Image 1 (cartoon, rainbow, N blue to C red):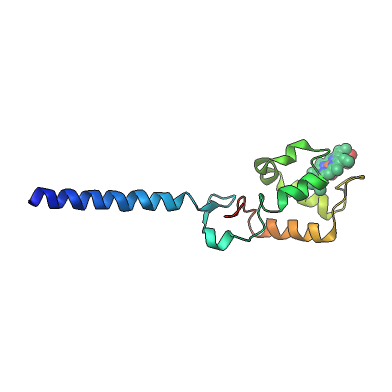
Image 2: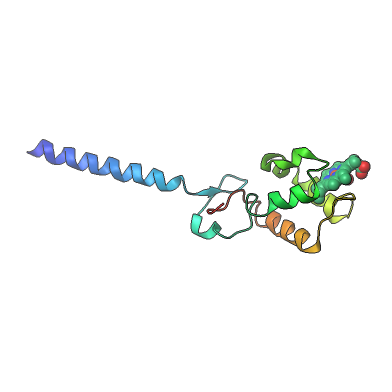
Length: 118
Ligand code: HEC
């Protein structure tokens, strides 16, 4: 009887741990590896939710390497600088003021990669 009770407790504990790690998988991560809760990130501008599309419209026709988050995150200072100083994008590609503002805000917020819904 005593053994059965502790077995049940053990199984219960394992279940809680397993469920706990499941909900971890729904968390997002920022560039520095810190977790962002799904609720907070649901409609945040992220790489997958807005930024990748901007890069594809303005930069990747000439710089195909900017189609991945890893490269953009790694080269963010020269990318931001080239946009701020007006060197990039080059014609015929363009970037609207609204897109520049969105891009800047994304950088300032820590370049979050993935939002919960997308
Ligand atoms: C029509 C082609 C074209 C587009 C579009 C373009 N680039 Fe460039 N980019 C170039 C060329 C060519 C160079 C080489 C240096 C030069 O000619 O100024 C360059 C150089 C760069 C450099 C390194 C030199 C510098 O000026 O800092 C960065 C960073 C850069 N591009 C970022 C971007 C970003 C970010 C975008 C999108 C917002 C973009 N580029 C869009 C053609 C393009």
